[in-house]
Amino acid sequence: MKEFYTPGKSPVHEIDARVKLTFTLAFIIFLSLTPSGAWPAYILFLTLALSIALLSRVSIGLIQKRALLALPFALATLPLIFTGPPPRVDLPFFQTLGIAYSPEGLVRFVSITLKSWISLQAALLLSATTHISDLLTTFQQLRIPKLFVAIIGLMWRYLFLISDEVTRMLRARSSRSAIVPGSRGGGNVFWRAKVTGGMAGSIFLRSIERSDRVYSAMLSRGYTGVLPASESQPIAKNDRGYLILGLFLLMLLWALGLLTGG
Picture 1 (tube, helix red, strand yellow):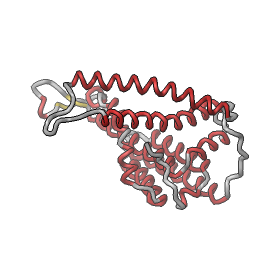
Picture 2: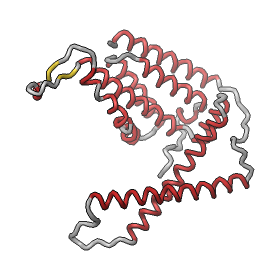
Picture 3: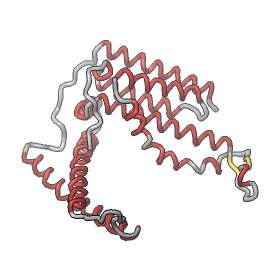
Picture 4: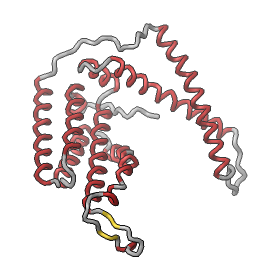
């Protein structure tokens, strides 16, 4: 597992982390408040995200690929197509079965999917241009509860430990497996499910043992449950200007969505 942060010297990388975090949260909030069916506003929100990605010199293809993780969660709104408000329209291929869909429900489903996809791109841009340590420091400076900050920091670090455990287990399994050339390795679906379940349980137990050792090592090095206090520096004048300009632009896009949405 590789960290998504991409080191660079782009203008986006050099902006204060507090400004980037505030703008990202505002971006997601304004996009979420945009009415359904505001297609021009969605296009402009996406254009703004892509423009920032180009300015930060981050791989747009990688961001688009990772942003597809929002699609499985958006599928939870799929029933809106069939349970949305009337009028209902019969599907051409299922008229005999009496299956109809709601055009307004379809618009809501597509709108939620697009908003989730674009919002995740904004979050990925933040993580790609801001190191995790800077984000944790920003959380502290913004008076986020210390326990919440500690949980985020530990969760991020343990993700890499668990990834290492999974990689070692897969490597060990491959080194102990032999497949006859031309034959299909492994058993049936139930056998594979049993093996996968055993590996998942083993990973869980190994993760608990590894986390205990890591936490003991952290305590022996002076960890108290919170990050070391860092001195809060004032936000530069240019960064404040970028934030004001960005918020004003988001308000304009949101207003456009109110005018064009359903």
